[in-house]
Amino acid sequence: MAVSMLKLCLVLPGFLWFVAAQAQFDPPAGQPGSRAIHADSLVFIGWADDVLVERGWIHAGNESLGKVTYGNENDALGKADLSVISLGDGGSAMFTFQFPLWNGPGPDFAVFENSFSDDFLELAFVEVSSNGEYFVRFQAVSFTQTEVQVDGFGHLDATQVHNLAGKFRAMHGVPFDLEELEGDPNLNIQSITHIRIVDVVGSIDPLLGSFDKNGRLINDPWPTPFPTSGFDLDALGVIHDTRNLSVNQPRAKSMRLFPQPARQSINFSLPNDYADCHVNIMDMQGNLLFSGGCPNDGSVFIEHFMPGSYILQLVFSDEAFHKVFLKQ
Image (cartoon, rainbow, N blue to C red; front, side, top):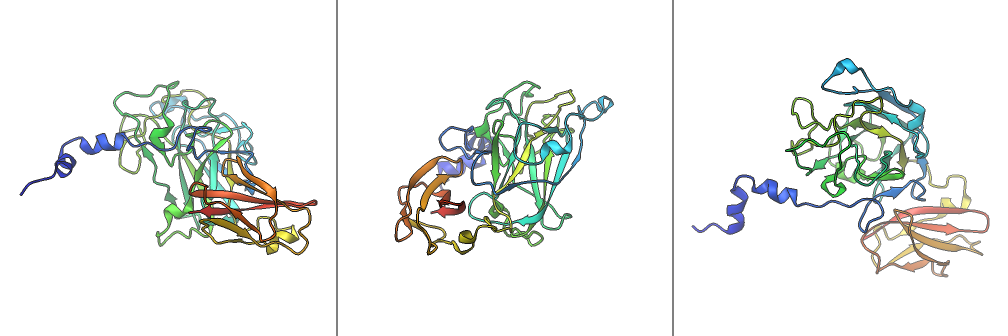
């Protein structure tokens, strides 16, 4: 029986790696298709304000150098501001939340590092829990070559890594969508109370290094034998939690967007007193895509928008609020 070329290729040694190595994920911040979210984006309704850090080694291969010392836990709290705490090789930071995060449309939170460029990237895993004991890791992928060690000042290509915090430059968060973790019977993605950030040890020595979901070593700048070793945690921005997005704004309490997801238009319910109402629609990076007076029927045409998550903002003379919707 004849075997198709595709089937033949799939069994050839190394072919699957070749196919995988060609995969491209989203590019650096500011480039078309990037999923990076700037810290000033209106999508964030709050910032993590409670964290416990377990520092890692300056050099996982030489523990005599001790553990990292740069920064303190307060540097990882509040809005991203370039003040950071270094986690060190294999170090971790545990965020806890008074108001649990939930799985809304699009990404639900974003993690910020302090890279000074688009290609000097220090990476970390992201894990979540709904009880503080059982954690599920986002399925991280790295297609960076593993033949030559990326040195302590080496460069990475953001399009070759996915679901790893730190793939974007400073002030641009890496988004994470709880929808990806749906189906685990021990995780309630509608009530996430803990998020853990775990430094990737970027060594290509299998006895020291970290592995992605496919069992492939993650090659990132290593070693970095300084007090600032490892992932430099700046902040965690919250997009969806159990608080009303505008709990103290009476108009927001009655506002709803429909349908969800939307296709041709997004509709919003208007309060009776909607004089001087203005509507803006932005993408998740905060770029303004539509701006105008609130239409009488509360409907905005969005058929030309690309599929994805967007922010609808209503502005009144005395207040402004926003909600996220999904375009299909």
